[in-house]
Image (cartoon, rainbow, N blue to C red; front, side):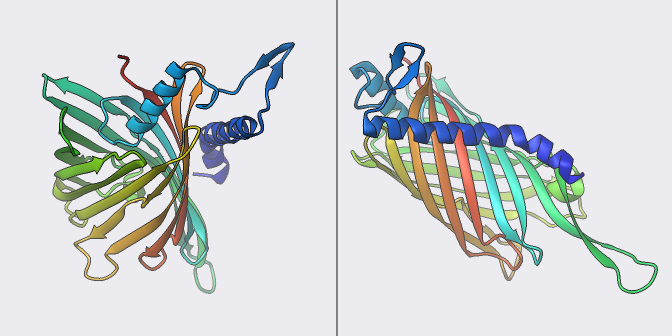
Length: 312
């Protein structure tokens, strides 16, 4: 696909995420300096925890607590934009836009099942050798754009527990297209588990899973992939928080060398209201302290999540 077409398809989600992030920063600065924005002759006061009514303050705090819990009893719709920089000798950038709606379903008085469907949309850079009439082949930098493999996952979680936890199955569905560049070509499944606690200062937890291939195209390698994501959220004033985490420590057990990718990083986030809608805005930087040769050494992520806490 031509670069012009790729840019056209990426510009709308990028513009949305960047606009929301800049608006978030502007509102935070206005709250710090006690500024107001005028609309005609009517002043508008920024909605922050220190100035909001008690009911709004409690609602935003509840939303922040739920947003830091991957298996909260709350519908959420996260959108993530990931830039993986420095790929290959040509220093290319892979782009991964992820949509992963989270939907909890009550199973009686004691249990919830939380469904999360991870759906990536990927721009994958690659190089091709073009034969020349005379001399060596020319290397041309190009790329493919399309849907990646989906990963539905389901967590069965008790409604009452001192330690918040959930466990269930995770699946790998080869929905990637174009198939050659976007899909592993295998159906897979395995266990996934998450556990966390939420002391007064924030959230501490870990998410782990492993997927094994159980079918698919014979011309593709088997899948045996491990995923580990520890996370720590430290809450700040005015609904801000800081996250220390990884974008997912992975291990490909099918490889004998270069099997690990270890990204370390974090970044700020904030819960705020857009009209009556609670949203969570985050930015992250990750450095891949361990990665395979030619893979990305660092990543920048922006995330925007619609939150729908249950009313009480």
